[in-house]
Length: 367
Image 1 (cartoon, rainbow, N blue to C red):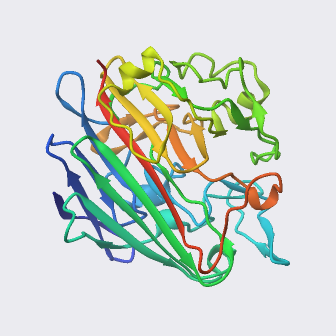
Image 2: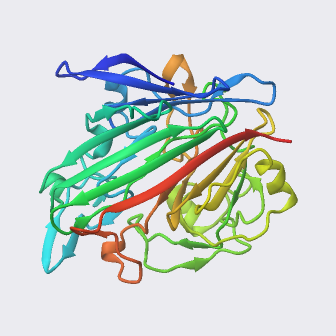
């Protein structure tokens, strides 16, 4: 079921609408046609009560004024591009500097600030699709890109995100969702230190001083970045590690390995989560307090783990108190800054070869 309501107005008076998907468990996901922002994800906890587990705001002005990118659809290129420049087919393109000498999350006005066209498929009453156009030259990128992002909430508690895009000439394209999760509830007034996390990855792409990858793919076995077994997010977050000190916590891209067998603890988290065919299970998280567990499955090769290191004392939706490290992000993506790191696979979108990817956030309770 999809319900639609007026959410707010932009500064210029254009209405912004909210689209709420609901499944048979009464769980729901609310998305705005502004930035395709995921504003709420309400799922059942171990007591059978609904908890909203993503951070957000109550009005458009707050989303525009914040540098957090709460819940946003990020593009044309997610993450950072070093030097705000890149070369493609012999031509140099200059991008907007919005992050201390690098271009972050699509520039000054990325996809997160676009007002999109929404459509509810006639044959699918638990989905909504948002469509947009990024014209040639927008934020410095070449080519006109026609893109869509589709959200589907299933009765078995899968939030499926399908991304598609086409271009009329070669350009860059690497999109993600920037939801901040707090499995205790967005209004729990607690950080994520006690949340357990596991990642199917033994490698990161370490950062240089400008917060973009150096081009290395580094083994992190036995380091504070090692989440190959469940551990609390807060256990090693303040360790005396050069990469952690640089970023003020976790803000790093993981490259996935494929784990063939589930451990006992994974089985406890995944017992009520159905694997999605043809997708890689890449991340698992759970809260003992709420009993909510989450899995991330994707077609993409990488994921940015961000622990909310730049969050500040603020007021979120429903008057909730947010503060330092109150949310964590699991942003599936292609390799960051790949256009400037020749050791990474390219993120070039070309005519006649459409982009398509899928990420699924799955929810259940422990036990």
